[in-house]
Structure formats: structure tokens, C-alpha cells
Amino acid sequence: MADPTPVLDDLRAESDELDRLVAELSPERWTLPTPAPGWTVAHQIAHLAWTDHSSALAVTDQDAFAREVEKALAAPGDFVDNGAREGAAKPPERLLADWRAGREALADALGAAPQGARFPWYGPPMSAASMATARLMETWAHGRDVADALGETPAPTDRLRHIVRLGVRTRNFAFGVHGLPTPFEEFRVELRGPSGAMWTYGPEDATDRVTGSALDFCLLVTQRAHRADLALRAEGPDADRWLDIAQAFAGPPGSGRKPKGAVR
Image 1 (cartoon, one colour):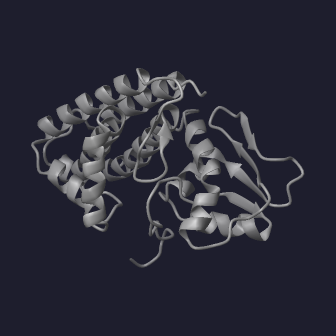
Image 2 (cartoon, one colour):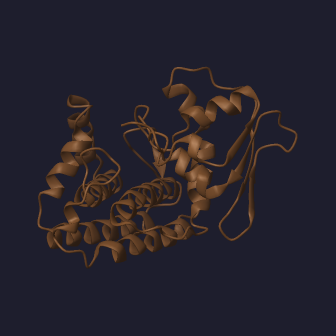
């Protein structure tokens, strides 16, 4: 069974880095628009706080989480935006305090989870390590949106390895959610991490291959950049299709970002 401790440590580090970015913002800067249409900096942090709360419910109170799923099914197109909107309406200091308390409660719950336990989610059930990985992925992705709004460019770290692994593992999900047949063969994925290490997945002799930087791959699978703006190379028709549809997050296909210079 996967030990959640390493990814929990990296989740805390990723959250702390984003916290430092927003902790001293003026109230006006919390209202800056981010690349996500209709979402301000406050909406981004509110979404993370809301999802941390839902994740903690899934781990500690599955009956309460089931009620949250019912709400999501009743308003499938609105429940995420509604949660972000509600949180963004709070005063910044209250929102920040709620996010800090919620992410700590989730980390404690995941750290105390029984070995081998799996927890319900809006997609397939997840282990403690998988849930922590998903939270790290979202924290990093929404943190990129906040950084863009503030004119900052965070330096990538090797914490990206968790998002890379999640992006590779969700290949079949991406094909399925787009109604496409799942490729039978594994792909070879070779990505250069921020420290210079090469992260590889799949058989060396695979026909379909993806190569490039780990940062660009993470931007792709979180749909924070358009493929046209990333230095990723695909060999083989299935790998090429994957780079057009990849997503590491649960739910319906995202609309993604337009290429730089495209008319909005």
C-alpha cells in the first residue's frame, strides 16, 4: 500500500507556498481576475477551501459526504462555482483562516487513515495517497492561476512528480470522458523534472511516446496552458490525440485555455 506521508509533506509545502503568495494581499488584490473566467483570487482560494472540506468529509464522515454528492448531482453545472462564490464572499482574513484550518484538518485525517482504506469521491474511490495527490494537483493548478493574476511566476519544484504520475495514470480516464476508445498499448512518457532528473513511465519500446518538460506536461494535464504553447512532443496517433484531451482532474472535459494570442 502506498505510504501517503511523502505526498502529504509535499502537499503542505505546496499549500504553504501559495499561502505566502496571498497572506499579505490587500483586499483589493483579492478581487483581481484570474485566467479562469469569472473567478478572482478569492474564488481560487475559496475553491481550494471548499474542496479540502469535501475531501475531509469523504475521509471522516461519509454520510455527510454522500449528501454533498446528492447536491452535486442536483446541480451538476453549478455546484463548483457555487462553492467558490460562497467562499469568495467572505472577508479575506476569514477566507484565509478557513482555508488554513481546512487543509490542516484534511492532512491530519489522511495521515491517520487506516492502511489500505479507500474513500468515496465525485469520481472513483481514492486511497489516502491518491486523495493527497489530487489535492496537491489542484493546489498547484489553482496556485498558478493566482500567480498569473498577481504577475508572479513561481519556480517549479520536483513536487511536480506527483502531478506527472497522476497525469499519466489518468490517460484512460481522459479518453473515456471524451467518449473515445481507450488505447490498448501503454505509452512511453519521458519528462525532464525541474531538478534535471528524467521521469519515465511505460515500456521503453512503446510505439506511442510523449517527451518534453515535466512542467509543460503538468500545465497540459491541469489545462493551465494550451498544447500549442507547450514544448511537448508526441509520437504516434494515440499519443498525439492524448495531448489534445489530457486531464488529471475528475469530472467532465474541461474547456482548457486558448492559445496565447488567440482572440477571446
